[in-house]
Length: 387
Image 1 (cartoon, helix red, strand yellow):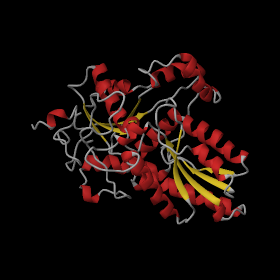
Image 2 (cartoon, rainbow, N blue to C red):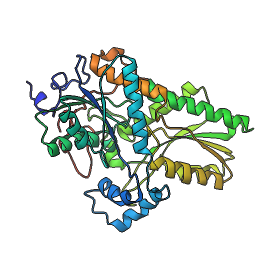
Image 3 (spheres, helix red, strand yellow):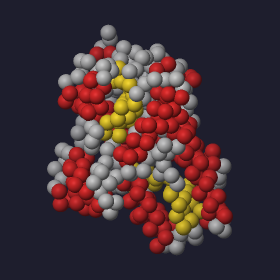
Image 4 (cartoon, rainbow, N blue to C red):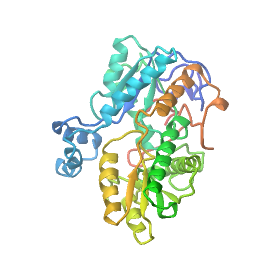
């Protein structure tokens, strides 16, 4: 085995040598749907937020400033129920294609945890797992942190020598992920036009989670130049262009960022969604379509930051605002995830893999140094060449 292969933690034989794309069939025993996790009651909120912010030394008093977003909804994030629905839909789609592979579920920050999913896999005799992270883009928080948490779960359970875990590629430009946004954008524009608002008075805002600028610059492999915002910014811009083109609209659009949580002294990606909306007030804009491009399903950053704060900001300045749906369990999205599973199970050649931007298809095995956290540095991670 090569020196590179020695650095692919817990990989199957097909991925152990560190290829960019695995083109050999692999027999996987189960899929592990990896979610962010969310509280499911008022008593869960602060413990959940402690998990999300662990290692940062943030006191509970400050966590309460965020907790009120969850408490407004009874302490319940929709994300867990979304993943239950998605899990069942994906199992049904695979079964309909004659693929008898169970879908397990584990979260990074709340029950059921990733370690619970790995324990279940071990108890059921599964040894080769394919991880499917509920995040489409490349950055520390949306890719590498999932890979690190899988590695940590192997350490916690003591199953590092017994389980092999590969990970499905980032699917930002897969047709199954993009189609729901195209459908939603077409529907929203048609609704606004029907209400008498001309397209010249409409703006489209593609919104995603802001991240520290230093982390954005480190997103993606080191040997590729992506421009401002690293791979994270480039992927979002490229997908937004596809959505606008496929929706057949010439309405002006821009990529904006939301949900910043760092200190004011730390640079994060901009422009801010709400600031852009307020700026439209002096430009004669009558309506805003908010496309939650960075999110695969509804959760608190969608319900609060978009449906509450962003929509209210638009309405307060005399504008109509429509937030289109996240992919959730849209049939095209579910079919796309099943395609991605079969892509790895069947070892589909790279040239035959669908990708709607020139950036993809993305890597099956993340490249060395990909998506470093500028503050924490590198930790052990599955499905990638070290570090």
